[in-house]
Image (cartoon, rainbow, N blue to C red; front, side, top):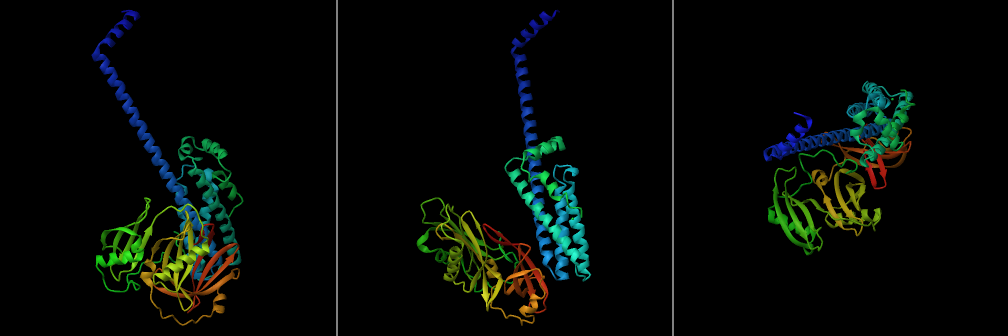
Length: 463
């Protein structure tokens, strides 16, 4: 059969309805398989992107912790506390290395960064051993730690810039995995100077190395000493909630029942307010024992900020006084999206009781109180019998790092991880542009804790 005859025969076969059905079906099957494969590949790429993003943001967190602990190690004068701080540097640097290795970049491209983290880890571990053996760090040790801290600040800044590049889509992990360093090199040339390539530049000279405020996340106590009073029923709790919110503001109250297995059992309510817009739902929790307000929150958008920080802090303080919380003092705060969250601590005989914390949310457009959380206060509040002060303020100052420029001083009760409290002299000071809080035990002069103060445009935080 000639070629022409074969083509004619093939056309005739196509005219056959059965043959045409088979071909159409075959095409459909191929199209479906292609779509399934494409979807699987898309899902795989997305999963990979998510995995790399998670590793990267874990890296950022651990590098931030390394920088924070290195900063604390510079002013610690207690071998015991120094050993704890340096051990944390060692641990956090190791974890940062682990997540760095999970990124889709070959080791030679970030070799110096990996080397830096490795040597931070090794050096801090060796110094922690000196502290554990009750040896003081030499001036050379402190100088090395200072240099390491400076480099860690650079690394943290570069990673934060890189985070912006990733969030804006200027860097995509998938492209870095396709062709390796050639694509990486091109990618670096297209992004800001403070991205991956710049990380190496920052360390090329190195040849050797919500928020919640101070003590706001202390351990939850088994005994709730501030949770006073007898058990109440749901109807009583409902009335307490309505009085707290203001009955004239309420349209409707719905009960969510008793949260009996919570750390502090509460009756929970949803309250609809007399508001015309959709943002009219307030949540509130009243403790079964004693009928205390544990939590209240109302979410609404704040478009403008008409109230300054000092005024907002005073509004929160007046609100607490009106609700029966006396002798409270503002400690730390954070502003987000037009709302200020302020931590207030109880003050007894001029001693700041950090365990007795209450958080208040203030709207910066009109001063509305949008929320309150009293768990720290209910866990810990009581009138304390204060221990005898055996170490004077001047004696405590002698325990401080000689480079600490003191800005303020006073007495403070701080919680510990062992569910105890310690009365300390609290010194706020500055070393090399970084603010710290240092706590010296009033009974034995021991350096109990060091916190780094981070001043941001949105508030004052501690780490």
